[in-house]
Amino acid sequence: MSVHLASAGETGRKTLLCLYSTLIYLFLYLPIAVIVLFAFDAKPIPGMPLTELTTSWFGEMLKDQKLVGSLITSLRLAIISAILSTLLAMPAAMVLAWLPIRFKSLVMSMVLGPVVLPQLVLGLGLVILMRAAPATVGEPAIILAHTTITSSYATLILYSRFLGFRRSYIEAAMNLGANELTVFREVVLPLMRPALISVFLLAFTDAFGEFVVAWFVAGFTETLPISIWTSLRQVISPKVYALSSLIIIVTLALSLVSQLWVIRQARLTSKVRSA
Image (cartoon, rainbow, N blue to C red):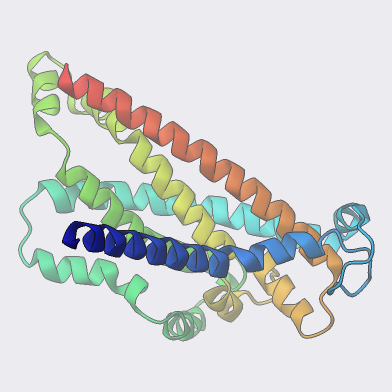
């Protein structure tokens, strides 16, 4: 009798857990599904119920020079910021993980600062800083702001990866006659490539969708989040839904491909280590 009661209780807990997980995923992905659905609504003001479906808004979106221009601007600035943050995070993480540093906890707290600080405070601070160099307001200021934010957690992610890095590989390569540059190029970079790609993609995604700090320092530069926010003060055009749907589909596809690639590289690395 007690065994049946325990089994029934376990089944009930699993059912509740599945129901809870389903509700969480619905809460997360239902707004995304609505955006994609409204992108195919034929009405000029999308809304329920959908009476007719169309794909014409995707063509109209491509004809909107302002919207496409802001998209290109966001892509360009996000790529530059992601590259800079990855390049800055790589040596910083190596130093923090491999060299003895006094007051390391204080240094780590300072590295974490831009992530922990509210973006409103960071934006106000950058506005005050930009007053000393008003010529940098616009794209340079946005790149600086995004690099400041993304390089912080990029450093922390690579730091944790370097902590698990086997220094014996470096010692073995140097014992075989390789110099430091060769060791870095032939040993460190290949083993760190999955983490670097993950950090780059994470930094790119964060910089591409960041709005608050960019709005403070953008000047006359209009990124895609700023353009969308401007349209929110009026009736949201279906072209915005079409562009958002395209971004969602491309992002999910890139995320899936990158995750599969990272998993494959991790398996290859584990095989090399076991060998």
